[in-house]
Image 1 (cartoon, helix red, strand yellow):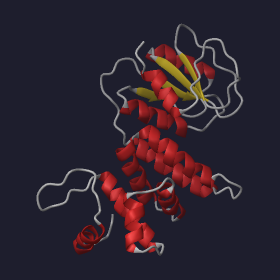
Image 2 (spheres, rainbow, N blue to C red):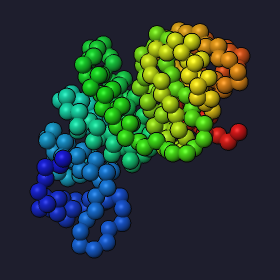
Image 3 (cartoon, helix red, strand yellow):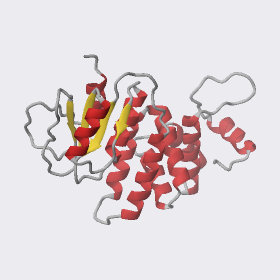
Amino acid sequence: MLELPPSTLRAWHRRYGLTLSAPQAGAHRRYDSADVHALLRMKHLIDQGFSTGTAASRAFHPGRGADVELLLDAVTRLDTDRSIAVLEAQLSAEGVVATWDRLCRPALDALGGPDHCIDLVHVLAWAITVALHRVPAPVGTGAAILLACADGDRHTLPLEALRAALAENGRSALLLGASIPEGALRDAVRRTHPAAVVVWSSQPAKPPRLRGKARLVLAGPGWPARGKRAERPESLGDAVALLTARE
């Protein structure tokens, strides 16, 4: 992945004092995913013309936005493997919610400007989805949380992030996917008896009418300002806190 000889790594450590995440013991250095991420960032900055010392400082003591720059560079090159590696390193180092807020959303926003880079948005969305899918689902955690997009809405990525964030917090979730008709959602609720139902909409929509006492959470900007029984988190972190709080 790094394509760097061991002699180069030894020289970087000797000259620039690279600080690794975990305490080191013995003669061999051990790199975790966050360290690999930092080395990838350092190599990228050198390739962009920065001095090795400056690249080392920025990579191992990054300011906000350095990770976004690295991810966008990989996406622009249509390098999905490298994009996924950047995302996975960030997920390992900071967790799902922080990665979504500080890396995924800024990168998506950067590609969604006036130039409408649709091809790059698809590459980025695919890389984010793959990385999130690698967050393992918990086992034996009781009733699952049901996740679905409102009928007509195909933006599943926020729900992918929610599924992964819930898994990280020990809660299982079932993702139905994009554009789920209300009748199909009711059938799924009847079959699974979920702990809660989260419906995402990015466009104007009417809240679904679910039978029984299923807990309804409406996520996304498409819902009306007022509702009788639905809970409405304002962010991914809010949704995770709401759905993992002890009743």
